[in-house]
Length: 396
Image 1 (tube, rainbow, N blue to C red):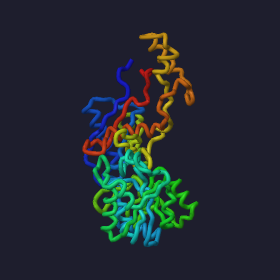
Image 2: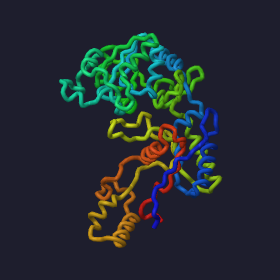
Image 3: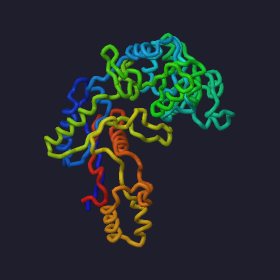
Image 4: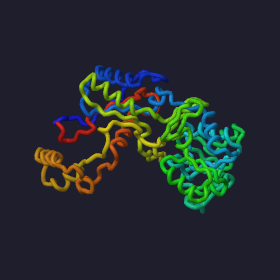
């Protein structure tokens, strides 16, 4: 029996810059790591590539001015409503800057006490002693400050009301804040609305259109085509973008399909092994302390090879050990469970023996594992190499 299951390695690469041949960089870095760390490349190993370096290498950038032009072209209004943006300096500040550059007044509707992915405007415990119903009550800025004062984000220390107001005002734009968790509240102020939420955006658009919205678009509709030669993303627009400089954003990658196939081909040429490859962004997990759900990208893995499709079909070993084979132990128990694994049904959905296993897609699980491994700071490992992920206790 093997004594090691899944092994995950962060792979160091050169610093990725615009125009680099990323497929070659990834493969060369994996092969160098193979030699230095003395591991063998095997069929069904997985190579993860962070979306950040894909966007950089393919030069998928846009400027604040590009955003302003697209907003002006698509709305052609001096007053615009923004609903449910996330609270993020990296994710939304430059988008807001571009929007503010294109109009004269913004009605900015924020959800409370936190945004869609868990970033807090204020600690939700503050609601306990207030006669406030966050599901129905609408607050203006005056009432908000009266109730919650100068509350800041627990991790970043930023007061996002002040921060967003400063960005808007610096562009010569006026802002009126609305605090409401009902998306249609914005229609009391303007019929032209930019929907800024991520995973609930389609439902938000539908509600606004069904209730009298005039021009209703989402962040996925902005920069979904190039503006004056800018980068763009045809499917996600500005969703998944990140701040690059004070006037430029890196967009979510749109050219990953060719990359993953090329990496797979190059590894096969060099080793004769067929690995699986994915491009990953934010992992889908929640911080239990800060209550932040990490997934600010529209999806965990925008590109992946076909071998990563599907969901786990696993037995719960604890369940088998405690129930069906509760009278066995040591070698007999191990043999019984290995036999159970080798003969399990191809679809265990609904089976008691699978209860407690993780009901998620492979690409979301593996992308989350990659994101946790590579981190978001200075680890210098934008490539992740995973071995044994599809193994189980019966694997030899």
